[in-house]
Image 1 (cartoon, one colour):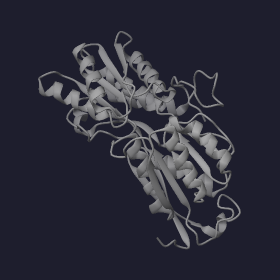
Image 2: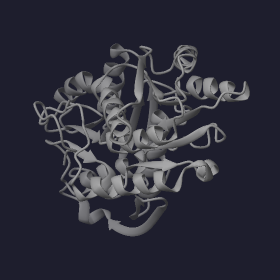
Image 3: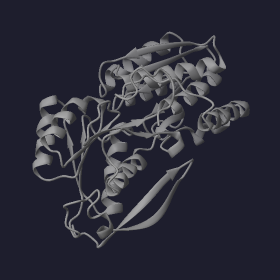
Length: 358
């Protein structure tokens, strides 16, 4: 692809809708900063590693959309690989490092150890680890405070449950996933402390059958609102809830890691939305400005990258007072008056039990 003399960067902000503002960044202004050593007419090179398919309508899909945004908005050359094992992680990092890539977005907590090794081998390449915990001069964790949105999802679940029992289906019990569930529980308890919350981790991000089995088990116990934190496996949770309602039961599902309201709109209450393209663009802008590296990048509600999004298709099913309660909690989080519970896992957070980062 040919590289224009200027790069069009679209600043994505989302509080209910995406607003795109065009800004021209001349390549010459970047020389000697984030793109030191790169010729003015050479495109940036960005890569994405995912350990699952980008067709999951959530975590992986959002990362891929972020990569495409960087291609389309700043003219970057981009590449994507699906890597499943630590050996494949190392091999992909070496391939991109030897090819002179500027940034590799390693999309998941599981990449952090391989990222440190790659950072040592290729000091001129930045490795950006989504939901990572380890930091180096050229290894940057991007910490999404998704628990803020998950807390609001808990409020929604507490306000909609009829049985007083709700459920959580997770993939692997890593700290970022645990954090969203602890926040969900806190959101539930803020409305109805009497509601019980079930929790199941299936040990996989992509096993649709296992996720469906876990969801069915929770529904059979009486749970009538389920939230997930999985990737492609989420389709099993949506399917279980859809089949339960078809059979005559009343049940809802809440999506996560993206706006999943369209996956099964008739049974989806809302989504703990993670707007990954906006976060990827922020990282690219920091790199262009020579400000990337040596510290984590936090991205949350205050930057418009996470929020709870009620499903418009079922908005009339929400009691007005419940929507008002969600809105008030959102304002309280944004003001700093409410620190949503989180599970610390970033090196500079260890020992901090509360707070939203920053």
